[in-house]
Image 1 (cartoon, rainbow over the protein chains, first blue to last red):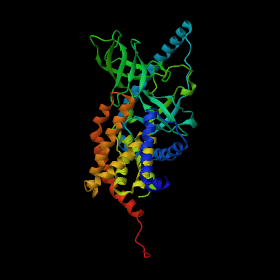
Image 2 (image 1 turned 30 degrees about the vertical axis):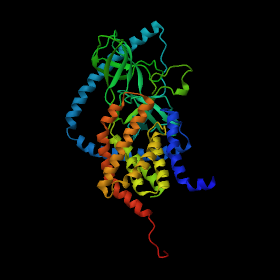
Image 3 (image 1 turned 60 degrees about the vertical axis):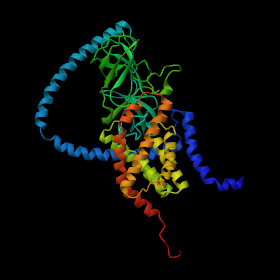
Image 4 (image 1 turned 180 degrees about the vertical axis):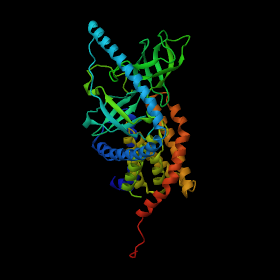
Length: 286
Length: 166
């Protein structure tokens, strides 16, 4: 036995190196393992380098861009001044609407939605494997970011935290094929699901054929998935397909956020661990 | 080429790729730098050293993917073993031949990764990924051309000089 092992130890070791990850993959499937101490150590080494490189490249690019931007800055200033005036007027009008909204909410005894923490983060790198569209951000467990929290920008929804370690976290993008978000048409309040397709537009699914939805409608998060807060912009409806038969109608959603050009994001909401037992996680990556 | 050099190089290349992909604003296109490294190992490393190195390189890629499932660890060792068979049929010498070899390895790696992902996820998503495959293979070929001199230099630094005692 010992002589056999001694003779065939090379193929045996290579066979183990080949088959053990395959067995682990087939048994675990798409379920990612929790980060162990080796994973954490590697991420702790690689992420600061990623952040440094990103800062270096962006700093160099910003220097060149600043010089180019100086040209025509006066005309831009004039245009911005005008736009500022218009926006101030709009803000005043919105303030009135907000006051009115608050009064009406009180009349209707609406429960106030509890605003969670908003943790800012910078995108330091992109996942080097295209099978899962994700980015790495510069906030992690130390800053209060945990798995299951949602990530947004002022323009709209970005994705969901799938792994958090010391000072960094990985965020699966809404464009990833495994992503599902419970959504609503802002105008008609019709409900559906936005599914990622792996880049490009999202797919509007589970929208009943009888629901009122039109090309150009704004799609917002419904908040019923327990992941994304309600009312965050997802995108606009395009290529609406009203079928003659079947239960559902189909459409594309052009995302409000270009996920290939992300720089700063906000992490909001509650982690999985804070979710009530039995609550749904429709919006989670499947 | 020693195990630790491979691991350090893989970590550095993956980090650099992650930043470059972000800066270039690529949505699905990636540069498979780890496949280039594994292809080089298949041509130059011994069986055990190469298998351990490929395993580690795959582990790092798995980890950097954000959703480690061991798939890329398996694929790295598999591509390494298949890659070792290729020089028995064709001669791979020089940067251009190496780039073509790395591109072939990348096609195999991507198709297998797509197949195994489909096997577990059963989504109708592979179409978009396969559409980006030509760009990805071309970028990997360019990366192989660029990395070949560096890898050769690392390999040369690891070789023992013929000493006077021999």
